[in-house]
Amino acid sequence: MTDLVERAIGTAYSRRLTDTWHLTDIDFVRALGGIAMHNPLGVAVWRARSGDFRDLRHMAKLIASRIIDGELVHDHNEARVAINRAANHLLFSACEWCRGAGQVFSGPHAQVCPLCDGMGEEPFDSDDDAEIWVLLEMRKCEAAATAELRRRLAGML
Ligand SMILES: [Zn+2]
Image (tube, rainbow, N blue to C red):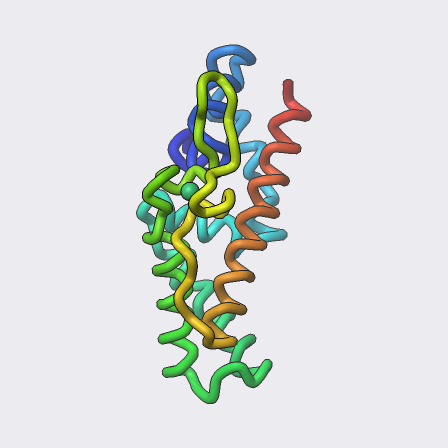
């Protein structure tokens, strides 16, 4: 649980929540409650970042239907390839300068990483509409889930 939260909101912030404000695992479970229901893809991406790909595999079927219906791909085979490439990029192409954090520290201050411009990823080398759509959708849902989790945790302080 703590691992999932740390990946979602950052290790430093998570430590501050537990050490300074004494939020417990139960608080994190409560904060996460409901996010998965409204935003299953965002939570599936968090889980995948923690090494658990089951939710993301389940979501892949829904994403495939959407990009087939949206005529970004012709069939399930093309959909699978596009989803795999987008997911691999999102999960395994952390920027080497900031190690995926999107920010670097100079002295005590965090700055937006100059190499990836805060994305935390290497640039995505694709001009395929389906791959780009899937990548943006996963990023958008993960960011929304993270913002929602931060909001819920802040409400508990
Ligand atoms: Zn970077």
